[in-house]
Length: 169
Ligand SMILES: CCC1=C(C)/C(=C/C2=NC(=C\c3[nH]c(/C=C4\NC(=O)[C@H](C)[C@H]4CC)c(C)c3CCC(=O)O)/C(CCC(=O)O)=C2C)NC1=O
Image (tube, rainbow, N blue to C red; front, side):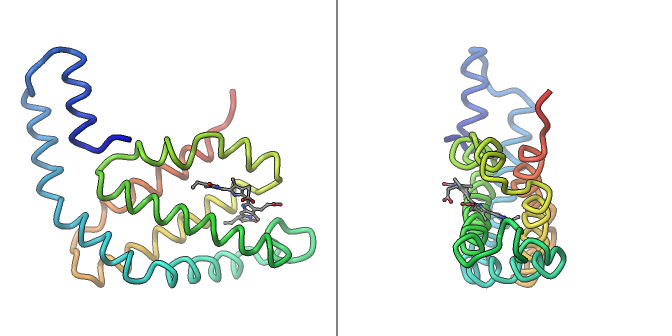
């Protein structure tokens, strides 16, 4: 598992090089955004269950067929599994936000996930929509916590979306 700093060190060590201008700029930007990242994590932690619940409600309102007979989130067991997945996405996205790196998502969440979803018939499109709804709710929450520029919050959620949507060639 890597963060912004360890990943940079790894790349420069492989090349046997001192940090150059690019490296210094990226370190600066990581440390300058540090307080905002920690604030974002705090804002998420203070209402994680609420965010997941809200995102689920919004998703099922948009796509009610998911929770009707024949839908993948139909039955309380599968409904609960769906919300639990959203909770995983939120928790690991929070780790990635603090780390300033999406590596934790690749290692702990996304590896083999598409295959699992495909074999269980969990629909990717609606899952991606759920992640995007979660992102929007998190950004509102982070903004309300006093972080003016919330653009950095997009990265881990968009990473999940991108990796899940990627098609086999
Ligand atoms: C920490 C990393 C991690 C992830 C990400 C994870 C996901 C994950 N989601 C699963 C199931 C599932 N995931 C969903 C999710 C949904 N169905 C829908 O219609 C919605 C679109 C969506 C919610 C947004 C559902 C319903 C199941 C149960 C499917 C079934 O058993 O038939 C399963 C199969 C095993 C199980 O049921 O627990 C895994 C492994 N597990 C992990 O350990």
